[in-house]
Image 1 (tube, rainbow, N blue to C red):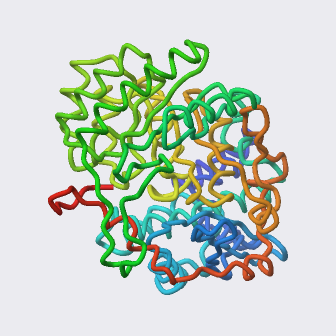
Image 2 (image 1 turned 180 degrees about the vertical axis):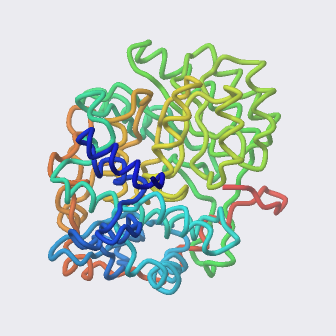
Length: 453
């Protein structure tokens, strides 16, 4: 007796004929092996990608990039965020010209395989343009999966670990008093975590709403915003001291250094604010200077958040595995979408690193919905950066996450629970005048040296 005949007889006798072959292949009537693909072809047709579209819209005057993936199942499509505000047109080209031809015809349910093959399809990879383009497609495929399963996305990720998502807001001002007023306002609205930023007199200060130091009459690409790190590093500890004096310890205070100071000065600043017990200090170093984190960890217990500019695993893996940061701040559409973000969150869990996904205005409402669903499902959630969506954004993106009492609440509709009104989106076209791309390249020291934003 041939081995194959013996196996078939054994399986018939045990009443399990066909079960293993769901995995390793089956036998047809003529005893010839049948592949999994052939078996699938005999049943329900695979869910195929039929089209990929890109939408650029600016309902809140910030350039957003949203990807829509359509399928051969009537009415079934998904949305994803591919927003790289400063290079929106480049991402649009990457999706429409390069990814779309690669994706049309593929099985929309093979999300990880599509991610892996698309990631290496450009050969040179780990860049923000491809990362955002791939992220938009990836999120859309997860959205499709949730809609097909008729489940909110957090259910497909393992279900809720919490009922709502705790958030923080930005309290900024030109003076300590203005920041204080903003903190009091947010506390009154129920927020328990608040980021504080204050202008440095006469200097362009990130997130402060203060003076830019720019001459608006200059041509945009000749504009200069003046910045000096020393005055800033001396002001921030005083800002923390003022807020602790006014509000005590019943509010968690955060601050974003935004990589604008030399590493050695950033280390001193993080040590100086330690006694005021910040919830975290964000981006003390640039991605190019991550080697300093090991020295920083040895000198202070101040919690550190990092990662919104990361797009290469070699940037975040050592920081997490060596326990050099406390919060991972990645921009989900930069690192490759939900597929990569959920893997990063799982990796972080084993090293006591919590999530704090990037969530400013240059994340579309679709991206915010993705953040919130993942926040609900991961056990090592930390905090979520939040914003109030304008009425225009809510009209263009019906189903935006609800922000109430300092918490985000996700929609329980299938997928991300958010949609795109294409007709309204077209009423907020992306404008190239003024050239927003140039804004981050205008920051300089008083002597003219360029500064990282």
